Image (cartoon, rainbow, N blue to C red; front, side):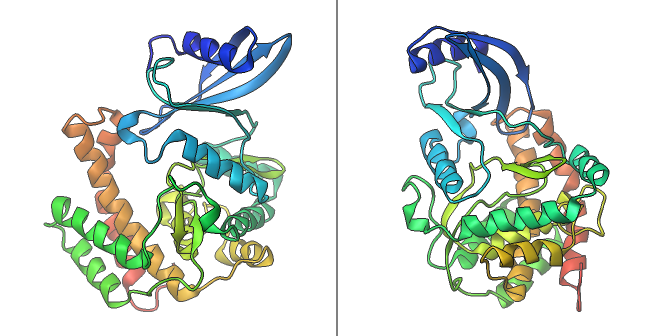
Length: 333
């Protein structure tokens, strides 16, 4: 990132809006492992607008920023709450990296604060139903209508994803028998292609949602969106234990049970498949274990030098426990 991102954003927006822009209230919102988010107020012709710039390092860019912006606007047009895109810049000359500028939406994104907000407002169940409905609306979109630069899953997303994860496990976790056991479990129970492939977010979990006292306000982080994926992958991912933030009894995000979330999903037109859901839940846990190992390796080899990445490796043993609990007979967690 440029040493002076405020100057770069000022120059870019002045050209984009065709009028001088003044930027104030410049605030770094996060120091995540992959992207940087900066909130600021841009004043044009005396009119202030609260905006957010998402800076995307090319080394971790999963799709072009224009494609990500396009799929976000497509989802927003179909009733998924998403911050409106204001501008997209692939030119690295302004802040050193590509970026997307969006409307700012007030609310909480830090998971523990989300849980406190919902507890204080007493609307956790309604928020879970809104969350499920947002996911159903996303899955109702024709995946062929998304920008072609958005990655497409293959004809059998489960088999494709399993092969990818197996390769990662062989490279980084070959000495850990729990992962070998879980991979064998997955291979024996491959669900086959989804009946209705969908546009999937792949990371719509607590931490990528903006939550207020009135419930769900927006879904963030569309960088991992896929076309023609299995909708049960999207539902299973936010139910994993690592996204419950010590509220393990509440399967979805640490604030709602499965029936409440799925009720919102089905009421908005989605179709829930319990067996596919369970497969993708185990798959997601293995995937995250491999991902944690990859993040630690990326820090160690210098690809992405970041303390968040470095600390990821210590959590692999937690994932092993989760896997054993999920694949044991008559599992309900």
